[in-house]
Image (cartoon, rainbow, N blue to C red; front, side, top):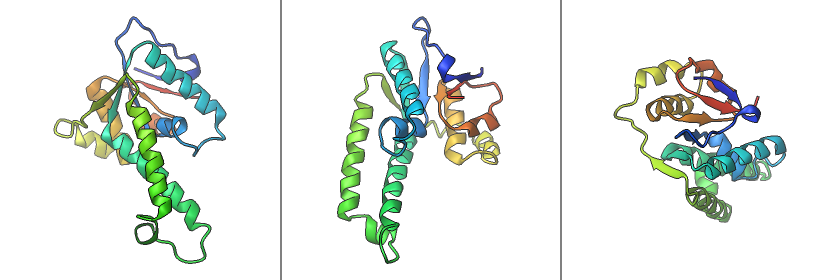
Length: 181
């Protein structure tokens, strides 16, 4: 098991592989948060297209979509908060506002696009069988959801696609990562 450079990584149609795309990948592909990162968008878009073309599975746990929606909502909130003269609160002022409703509609469209990908397999998060001790140990070096994703990838025998170098801190050779170097 290894960490692969995305630009040198080649999918094989002979193998039955599954992938879990980290939240940051979905944000590159389905938001404008990183519109200035053309290299990343192009590389991850090409990989997604190749996974689809080779009919490999893309596992999607609910917490990835939860992170995706929260990041987009917080980014929108922060951009508005930075332009107002008063103390703009997330729940008091933003949630339920026209800006919030507009952003949630946009996010719902993104989610529909993601879920419409033929290769997407919605999966449970395996909480009843996941190794919480490993997550707690990794949580020292990476955030909780990333540590959880590592354990889920191990259970599902899936390859993690990420642009987050933090995963390198906990990589012990028992799962694969594909990312840009």
